[in-house]
Length: 264
Image 1 (cartoon, one colour):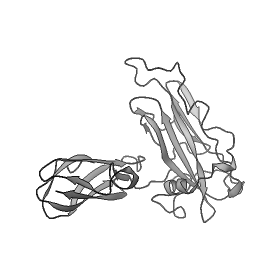
Image 2 (image 1 turned 60 degrees about the vertical axis):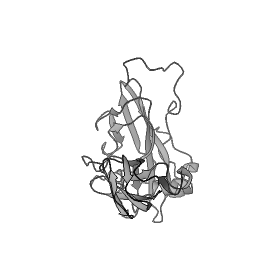
Image 3 (image 1 turned 60 degrees about the horizontal axis):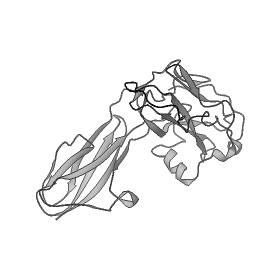
């Protein structure tokens, strides 16, 4: 376990953590158009999301990243991918996918943290960093942010000053609540497309992210095209109501979600 010697001075309620994103993180300049064959031409930006105050007085910080590249970019831990002050390796991501990815490095620090913790990335000769300027007190998360940042771990028991390993986020698109119907429907013998996803922040390092489908209940047999793929197809040989489960693992922690399928 890595423990940095970060000084502590400010009160939790007046926290001014690392400043947000460097200017330019939230937009693409008009003249920044991709060149054919140059898929990896843009910078990768580390982003500070905000913080929440825990019941024990500790603070949970959230870091994200933004990449305009069309393909994944790899930046190994080292001079080009480092936290400071203290140990440069806090378990932060080394593979950066296209787009804006929140909650990628969740760090718990003790009460009195002074806000001095920066993440710096260098890609294609350009260095970007969360700023040395302090954040405003208003960067404390609201209720929805608290749920997202605190998902899957106990802040009181979490290791300090490093990215916390959390269970994967396991979902099935088009199912449940505002994302879609409360149940999926298909005819006997017809293929049902299951748009599952298993997303993880990349911890533990070296661990494999895996997915698997199984039948929890139902009157007949379910045939999956590929039980080891989050996105797959399924067919049902008898009418009735089925419950399916998608399991996701990062090799250390796991999570599941279930879907109801009505076969007519």
